[in-house]
Image (cartoon, rainbow, N blue to C red):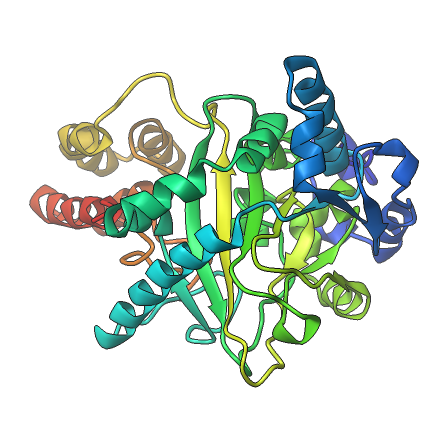
Length: 395
């Protein structure tokens, strides 16, 4: 649930960064988390709902109870604080086995001299393992099965997204002395620049958080000095948040007023992707703070038909060059590119398409538009599109 439009621009269906006011965010944040509204929660800590995994799963052990629990979780993530902590969500022994596999992956990356980027932190500040889900399955299938048999994940994912969801995983390690991230929102609109986000109508700003559930599983004990994630409870309800989090005034407020909860190995945090948050800085001297970041996606974020867009683009590109020579407008040409080429950079292989120079890698549509503007021959465009396609492969 987002706040009502706060400007004439929003009423007309579009949001502008110029309309983002800190006072409006503060009005949203004034709402307090009431433990009485969430009967299955054990406690409220710094406005965050804290649940015990055993109690939660026991309450949802039958169909009626599970629906009741899931309705409560969905309410917490939307109209409530936007974040819940589930203590003892995972068996620490299973987590340790998976941590060992992740550590081996990181060591191999380092030995290979791979530079791993981060969306919201300086490259090199953290150790990252992209597509850790697939890599874990191949490296240690038994650990994978024991880890993802976890019913807390299924309970939370179906509460927010319904069935058919897709799980992806990225390991994030903030080393001792490592700097954390800047405040942000997450995928989808959270991975766009404010200029791009402003091109999407207001109702898409409301839709984006409903397509993803974010989670972080603690793979070590995380005292506050180790830099567990920083959160601003209730901030997911601020309508202009995807544009506002870039602004210094909002960043300064987050830095001064965020909350930060210590975690134990096996605890899990689930949150609305529109929640203002950031990985914390690791001020410890001996804790390699490891978290498995789960990005769980709605089944509905896909088209109905399979289309070979590379084949489609290469078939029509000579005609586009001819129409350009005939004097067609840039808008007409752009309309054809939008209808034929892939206009979104994800999913991709972030080992190859790292977000080092921006929020997201270039799209197929961008390459086609650049080639068309430069009058690039079709064979050269074909080479570029083939190279782009290779970056999308998981291995």
